[in-house]
Length: 71
Image (cartoon, rainbow, N blue to C red):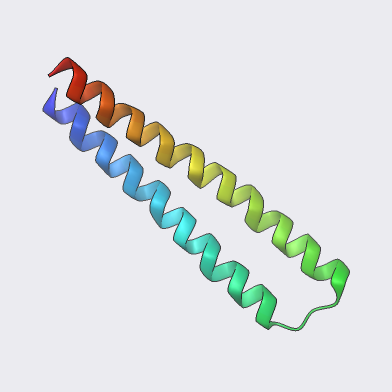
């Protein structure tokens, strides 16, 4: 089950990279000095990507836990 653990680790790290990307993008959007409507539209996109990255990260963590339990 060790490959399952390593695969889950890789998936979790990919999700973490997505979350970090969202943090950087949100900071850039806030510093851009956009009007309220444009700011909301761009942040909504970042939130959608953030939810997807969170899902990927949680899926990876579940794979790690399953690999440890089956070990």
